[in-house]
Image (cartoon, rainbow, N blue to C red; front, side, top):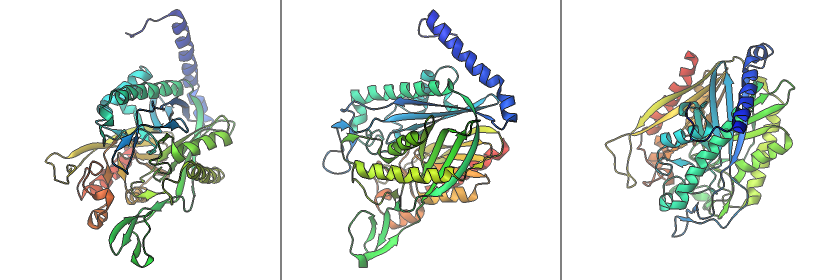
Length: 442
């Protein structure tokens, strides 16, 4: 097989040893499955921290982006690879604001670069890229001219290679596991940020006279879902945490930071040595923490609150039955509009991912879905355990409910952040449900 580098004796010996290790793990798979360890699971990590000139999105002031002033905490890719009976799926959790299609040269092409960097064992359709949506990462959504600068373009290339490196690491560390899951609650960690008032929709953080406030437009979701990959010794090798909230504790503070998702993962790594924690943000399009832009202390506190909820969930884990693995993609077309709000002739085309791991299903939604969409998917899911993940693959802006379009507000106002028309959420939700239901055919 052709390689773009010289196949040195040292590299040959190293690759042969790695291949032998993976082959040995796979050859023992049937026996491990009989012992109740049906999954081969590996994790990997890589640094995504940008140069400071690859700057932060600023939602206030005249400038839409500005360079960072320093690094509070590095940004990471945390990758999970799961294999069963010759099939493989990988999910990369990225401490990024999102992956705008224009910003990364097309999400399909970007994933090809990632897969190439990972080696010959990966193909793009076996890989899901999820962003945590931290607002203290580069402005990578395509909403500013930062994406046209040379430092940004170079950094995007580094990001693809680093994700590929983390994938290789994960694939080289496969270990037999069983899967268990549970859900706990972290009351108050997130709120519906769209507040109905007598003057229309206002953001939660705005100070408003009490007599004008009607209440939140829609629900919130304080649940914290945990999927744990547990070794034969009973210790978790990987923890997947799914909760819904905008990471905006450090928004507009020009320090690189993964915000509360990074604080959560670091705390869980500390509490559970030998385990890698990953955070898959939910449908947080209309959910915020109670305080915004409060700084690093608030991010740290939020991470600790969620870590406590995760540990509570670990105390009541239930085994996930079954051992089928499948990753499917459901195409979606929604009526599109331009940044001025004018209808476009061509629809916005995207796709929704659905991953089955035995009796557990994970639904991967692009863009910023509202929590109403997530709750509807979970309520209708036929699976023992279902997690809905937002900010997956390319960023397509907000997918707001029809009620939100009727009431108005930031998420539905014309702009580069609102690319679809009224009526899109219903299409989006139906296609997500179709994707999740299709996993029963596997």
